[in-house]
Amino acid sequence: MAGADAVAVLLPDGDGRRLRVVIAEGPGAATDVPGVPDASDAAEGGRDAPDVSDTAGGGRDAPGAPDECGGHAGGRLCPRVGASTLVSDSLAGQAFASGEPLMVTDPVGGSLPGRADPAAPGPAAAVPIGAAGTVRGVLSLAKRPGRIPFSQVELRTLHAFAGQAAIALELAESRIHAERLGLLEDRDRIAKDLHDVVIQRLFAVAMTLMSAVPLIERPQATTRVQNAIDELDSTIRQIRSTIFALQSPDGGDTGGLRGRITTLVEDAGAHLGFRPALIMDGPLDNGVPPEIGDHLLAVLREALSNVVRHAKATRVGVHARLAGDRLTLLVEDDGVGLPADGRCSGLRNLRERADRLGGAFHVDVPPGGGTRLTWSVPLG
Image (cartoon, rainbow, N blue to C red; front, side, top):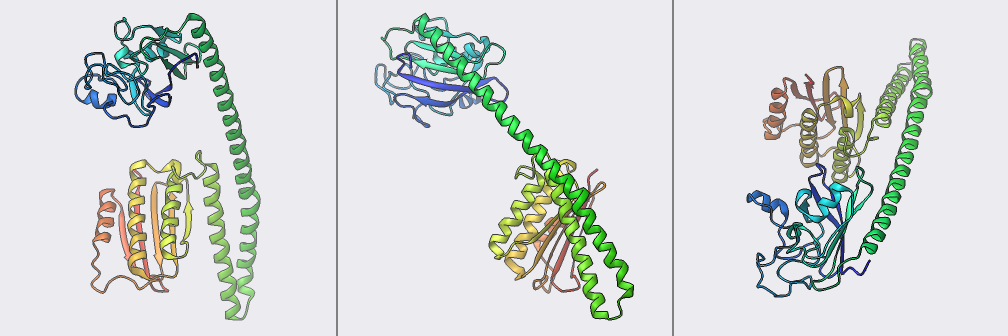
C-alpha cells in the first residue's frame, strides 16, 4: 500500500486515551515481539515507554544491530498486535485527534514524537479512518530508513481510501443495528403472543380442571387431575420465564443473570448426565443488583457442586425467583440427603452469604426425600 514496508490499523481504547494495534502487516508483524514493552508496563514505572519502537540511541539493542522486524535498534518498523500508544504522544495519535492525515520524513530527528509511533524509525504516515469528530481509527504506514518519504499525492490517496473504509464500516454498523432492531421486534411480538394467547389458554384449561375436581368421585382420578393442574401451573411459570428472557435487552445472553444461571445449570447437567429442571421468575436481568447477582451465582454454583459430588440424584430442580424486593433461589434434588452429622463447610458459606445480605438460608428434606436448599435475600 503506497509502497509501505509495514502497515498497521490502530483503534481507540474505551476511554479514547490510547490507540491499540489490531492489525499489523509487514516484516515481523507478530503478536509478541521480544524486547518491545507495552505502554501500560511503562506507565507503571512512571514514564511513557514506546509500545513498538525505541528512540535512536535509547534502545536496548546494540546500535545498528538488526531486529526481528528487519529494522534497526533505534526503532522497530512493525508494531506488534495488541501494543498501545498514547494519543497525545504519537503521530497516529495526532492524526486521530485532528482528523487530518499526517506524515513525517524523519521520526527520530523531527518535531513529532516518532519514538512512540508504531511507524518509527523510517518515513511514516498516519491517516485517520473517518472525518474529523467521527474518527474510528488510524491507518499507520511505515517505510524502512533511507527510503523516499510518502508524497502528498500518496497521502491524499490514502486519505480517500480510509474515508471509503469508514463509510463501509458505517454501513456495516447500520446493517447490524437494523438486524438487531428486527430481532428485538420479533422477540417482543413472540413474547406478547405467549402472554396474551398461550398463557391465557393454559390458565383457562387449568381453571376448568380445578372446577371439575369436586365433581370427580374416584380419588385416583382426582389425584391425576390435580397433577395435571400442577403441571399446567409449572408450564405457565416456565413460559413467563421465557417471556422475561425475550423482553430483556440481552435476550438471555450469557452476560445477563439469566444467561449465567442457565450456563451453570447446563454445566452441572454435563456432569450429572441429565439437565436439571430450571425455572426463572421475574425480571432477574434488570431487577437484581450486580453484587447480589454474584452472590446468587456463587450459591447456585456451590449447591450444584454438592449435588454432583454427593447427592447421587436422578432429578434436580432449580428455581430462581424475583418477587417484589425479594430474591429467592431454591435447589431441590431426590438424592441421598445431607450427611448424618449435618456438617458441611459449603453450606456454612451459603448461610454466611445470606446473613451478610440480611437474608435467610435453610436446608430441609422435601416430601419425596432428598434435599431442598432455600436461599433468600432482600434487594435493599
